[in-house]
Length: 143
Image (tube, rainbow, N blue to C red; front, top):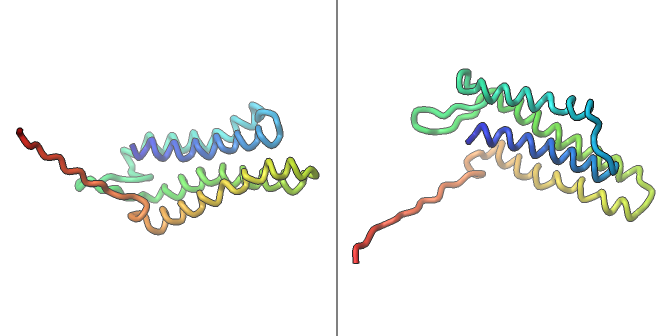
């Protein structure tokens, strides 16, 4: 599940970049650019596939506790690069658009990153506060 989480977080950023590009420039990314942007995803997939052997991204110890590995920073850089690039692109287009209507349409793409920054800061510096445990007690009462 952790591997799936790592991959999905990166894919969310990648898909957000594609979405912002299509919405701002009204065209799809060129195939060469898409392939170039997919290289970090391939690197992350390789790290995820080899993580079981080298514990570079994370490890789950004998007590079933999750611990981050040194590669977590690579994951953060890859995931955030897509989001930062989409934010810079939307900000650039917002600044260089003359029409106020188009600016109002593009500006929310820039605001999207604010919630991600707040959530990521909480997750990075207080990892136990971003997760929680729910205890469910089921009792059987014969009638």
